[in-house]
Image (cartoon, rainbow, N blue to C red; front, side):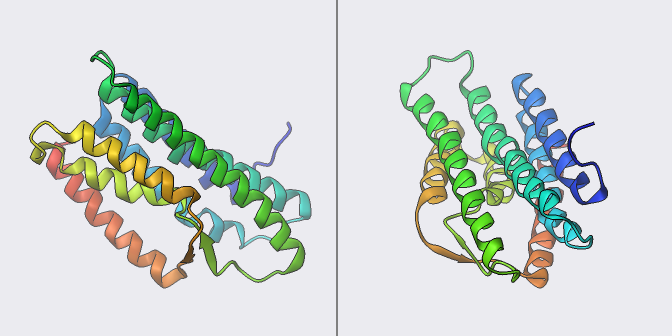
Length: 209
């Protein structure tokens, strides 16, 4: 079979599968479950790179890792949030601005990930050091941002759809805006994990899922 199936890519595959399940739920009107799957995908992505570094990989495996990670990120953090957004306006009188935002969001995620792939391959040819900075907002941050916004849905007096799409528009802009963001080390990742767990529990309690 083509492709690689060792343990270094398993988390990436699980994350992508979670996103696909999230899309199914969103299309069936269960956006809260879709958000839970988004958080699961974010958890997988948080540690897939760390797991991959535990095994000595050849050049082809490393390149495959970069490509599959970005393709999975597009599904998880680009397409899934877009599908959730579409589910919020499906069956309603569509505002053209909503569709523009959805297209722009997914497109900006795609552009960012493709640009990152090019830069990362060039960087790895020059150095073996770990990346210290990101340019622009990493797409994976939506796994924390959007579920948190969604968890306050019942407190927004019917304006959640507008808030959600405003968030998508701002995030899309930040995906492609050129600014430096420090890459978190293990300590910072564990801090985010704790935040994510608290958010997950709050989400479960709020929506009784």
